[in-house]
Amino acid sequence: MSENPRLDALRNRIEEVARASWPALEQHWRDGWLLRFADGYSRRSNSVYPLSSPPGDLPSRVKECEETFRREGLAPTFRMTGFQGPADLDALLAQRGYERITPTFVLHRPLIDWERVPLEHVEMHELSIDDWIATFAALNGTPQLRTEAHRAILAATPRPLCLAVAGPGGRSVACGMAVLTNGFCGIFDVLTDPHERNQGFGTVQVQGLLNWARSQGATDAYLQVLQANRPALRLYEKLAFEVCYEYWYRVLPPVPPPTDSRIGRPTPRR
Image (cartoon, rainbow, N blue to C red):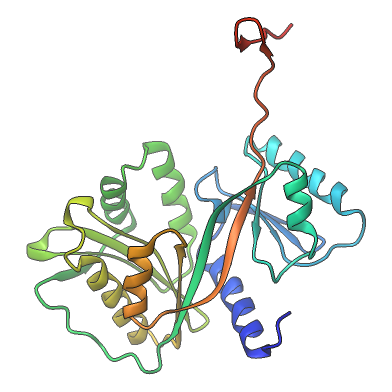
């Protein structure tokens, strides 16, 4: 815990509503750790959330999680925040060979002072799940198998839910979604056509989602941005979002098959 109780409460609240707003298709609680699975689509829905310090031997608990993920055909993955779970877990995972990947900022801004922004020279439309996923997949180049898992997650997402696209003249050059949970609006999957970037469409898309959130009575908004995505961070800074905390993933890489050192090829298994 930090020396700022209000910040601690805000961080834990965002973590709670974010899990609800981006659901897994299957999840299990194990002594304060949440194991989430969704056919491998998105690490958020296919990872261990170590939310408390469980009793017993920590290495044994980690090994149990690894075995569960491997039975699911997934790489063992832990979502780490630095303020939840055992303090020594991150170091233990590093010792076991877990890679630290995708460090991400969680940004937050209150919406009490948000005034509806007129969206000039652009139209924003709310779509059905199927139509929105078709747009997202086209902009992102998503494989069909992952599209099906994405559709299942959105079908399980709580309401109110806004799936929107934006663009001039009815064209869809940006997309994004917003989910309202207990007064907090989560903004996810904001994406702009690579050929249409730096023209303000991403900004308009987020403004439209915030307009929607405020109309639904949201008091706060949050979103997640890779720390390396400097353009996105500048965009959200202009919209008065501030860094609230960070998280990262620890992923155990697959063990490569043994090789024949003489020819550098995998050794046949017998």
